[in-house]
Length: 133
Length: 392
Image (cartoon, each protein chain N blue to C red):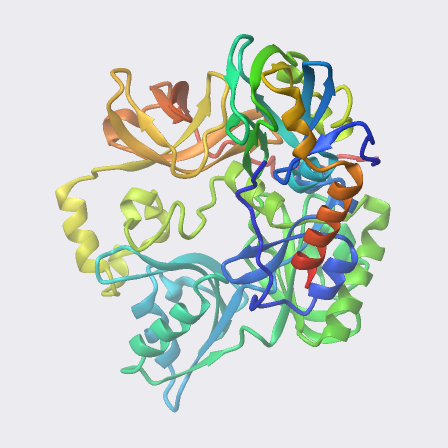
């Protein structure tokens, strides 16, 4: 699955799509693949303040519980309620329909320090080499 | 995003099929010091693997399991006496060709490990033990059989063990062997030619709650891969897929089969684990028996129950269980979504006062108390003797 060129990415495998001071956040295709079948998602309510690098929710597969970390600080405007009943969408469309939250960013410029798609792809390729060594 | 199933592959032990699993693109994890496939994205992943075993057939590499052979020395009866001393079930009741579930206990009545004891001959037994406890188990057996006229052999690395599991397993294996499989009852075994390999041990055992077989073939890579490929080829018409430890865990949990380090350990005794039907106090003395007598007299302090989440949330290993008033009363030993039932299930140790079916419990999930209920176990029980369903 391609990594959208306009998104930014974290080392914890979240993506963020910024438009002005509004942003959409989700987990990457690499993340969903590592997790396996996603069966449960817990997301913050609108109005919740999120802090860069701090956990704002969890995604669970059959085997594992994973914290999701905020790529940037801001206030939650909306959580993707669809995922409540169809968490498996995270496996099929992690960069699109299975976005997790929409936020109003405290400082949109801060996102520029995150990896772009090329850097993220290089990052996961490097990680892959480590674990198959 | 951070996963709790992080794998570090250096220094890990590998089964003879390791390269084959990696070639299939399996997701590998560290399981008790072993580099093992947890699921195969090429099979469709954990849930697909689980469902294949319930509906048709799947194959697992379980070569990480250990094997200890105990034979009599100069005199007859030495092996039986040794097995009786170190395990809680009554091995004298085993016919040649029969196996049973048992456990080795510490003097405290707690678990060294659970084992499947196979009686290969009048004076010849094979104990199949867990991977993560191999060294501990073999040392324990050697130490505690010293006073018996028997020979203990560690055959753990001699076998590649494949588990072919599911209602169609018998049809798959029938294509690969001359052995009369319909004559092998559950927990019995035979020897036959499998994939051209003479004298292969074929046991009607498994860890899935489904019908199935475990076969033991020579552990060289070429033979192991050849047998795996022939099993896959024979199973193609039944939709066989490789299955990993993830599905193995959800299958055994639905069937309420214990996992060492979870439902059983060196801190938990036989009565608490609810395994009394495999513990034969009347057979004579064995390690742990005296402590179990005392424990029985003292009464149960905690017992293993099955629970189902009522509120949204997944109970996981080591989460706390609380009562209505919020008091901590117990702990989850295994918890997972159940692919067969579509519910979130778990096993937990709680005081007997909370063990009745329909009792409300609360599982603490990330600081939230989520309602759950005690339910009958096993969560899933296969319908025996029914015709195998047709699965496309």
